[in-house]
Image (cartoon, rainbow, N blue to C red; front, top):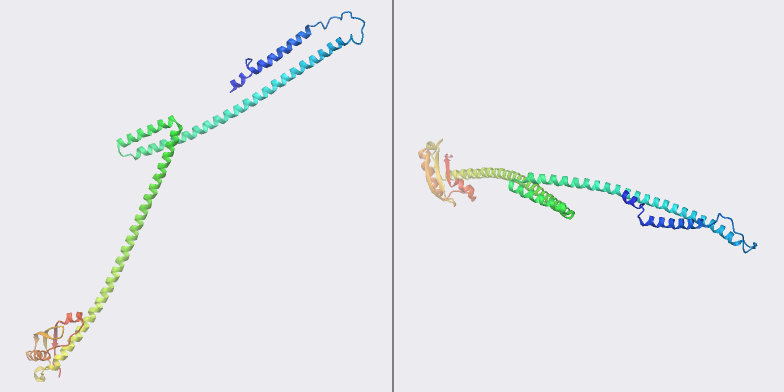
Length: 314
């Protein structure tokens, strides 16, 4: 830029050609005027009159005007040169400032480009590390070099590559977020399933306990009913027995009785006990025909084959 500014002061520039041409013409005019015989004595003239003295006055006036004109031209030239110098100085300053700004901007761009390249290099390293096979790594490297060449050919290609990278990162982040969301959902479902399983197990255990309690209570009830009907059957047999105190007192007999749901005696089997008491008890069962039985199926199931011990009551 300094050379360009200096070239404007060159003698061959159109501005200075015009300036020097104007100065040369004025110098020639000044020399021509000086070449006139202004210093020689005036030739004899006719008797001076008011009209004959007029040319000399005119010459003096023209010379003074000429000097004023020359001085004015010099001042104008000086002012023009000073103005041009100031303008050129201002231009040079603007050019210097512009150069400083350009250098600063180039440094900033260079720094940004360095950061961009550093990030791209880090991405390339990460891509290479992520590859599990040599073939994939070679292919990735080839693609990377091809992209790098495209970036060097045109900034547009670099912008496209950066845009693509940002898009891929956004998609990767989106995929990662989705993956993490699925993992979190799966864990939530697993926890919910475990909690549900625990609740189901607790409920099943509670129901089992309740069922066992109910079954136990029911069993007690059934056994109680069975004992009650056993007592009724024993009482019915006792009522129909032909008893003899002298031969039966303090004696007993065990009978195994098979009953129908209606109470009909299907079979009677004599077990341990006094023979006299057993015979009398068996005969009494035959006389009864039907014995008292429960209408509850569970109770009857327990008493369908019933063992009773008959002790004569007097």
